[in-house]
Image (cartoon, rainbow, N blue to C red):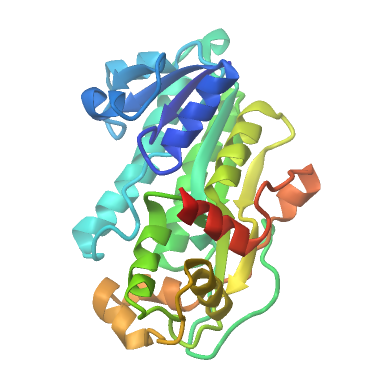
Length: 312
């Protein structure tokens, strides 16, 4: 297959490109800095300089490909959310997706891609609104979006992607949970306090953490790109685990204690109130569609997924 990918130098993007190249696919990576990308991505990946929020010559690279994997987006937890950072988060997702879909619409039908696999987030769904309020019910792709900032962001992001259906594309939106993998991602930040024997649950620990191993995240992207049965929103999670149990499992995998809880006010002080709400109030997201589609998880057990990530 001929596949164009954005976010190719990211946490999921790099191993995804490697997996596609290993399959024999012809991969074009749309990147901001080709020189930096070359050091991360395998040959013979083609590199095209692109500012995704703005139409330009880079859109020519979309003509004639079979599929697009759109993973690009400013890291959610990279900085505190002031008005400017919220706009950056939105533009890097919503505006870039709109630009890609509009570019697709300008192609002749025979030159258009057949598939768009778009990143999204499990933050699409609502979370409990107050301390001690937790809904244990399973959350599936049929549940409505949240009215939180992240919920609206994911909703609008998916809306722009779904607009590609009008151009004849099969569209998949992967609502991603916490991705467990080596050398990056949220897990890299989570292990630091455990290294200093200061790890533990966050808040009261009852909130759910929806997670997926990096190996499975890559496998799901490949399946979504190549299998026409994949379409619409799909929860890209393996399971959801209580934060207290997640922390205990992380400590066990690291051979460290998990006795020191992180109080909610400390989380809010570090990341701000809005992002803290998402961290302190999770959802029991389940992979309903992946189960229906028959996807077989390579790392279905939490401790095995964490151990695999740490061992690399």
